[in-house]
Image 1 (cartoon, rainbow, N blue to C red):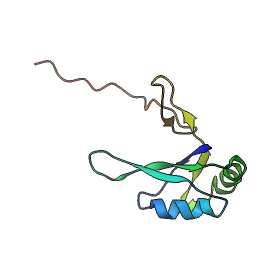
Image 2: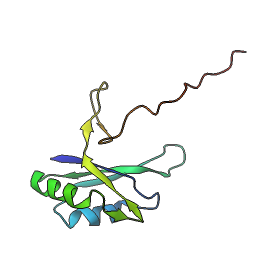
Image 3: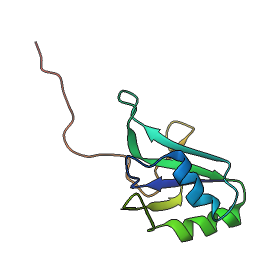
Image 4: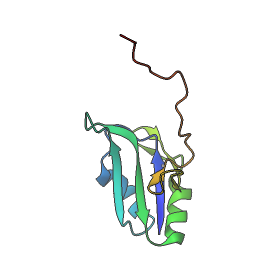
Length: 107
């Protein structure tokens, strides 16, 4: 089974639209678009699980760079998250956002 990272999604892309795009290349077991916990709005990325590795590889090759909702998708194999023992991380994305740490003022 392959877990596939799909990035650069339009905030209006639905799980059904994503499922249809991948089903053109094989059997899709599960689709999930990640949403913000506070607002419920899409975070612009998601994951697709396909049980057949050959079909998954075909889908990755065909859909990486293709457009859904006017956005060019970034599609690759999701890597397991490091350090917490579970889950998956964004394929080629960096985990750190950089910048300064937010610190509360001392009162």
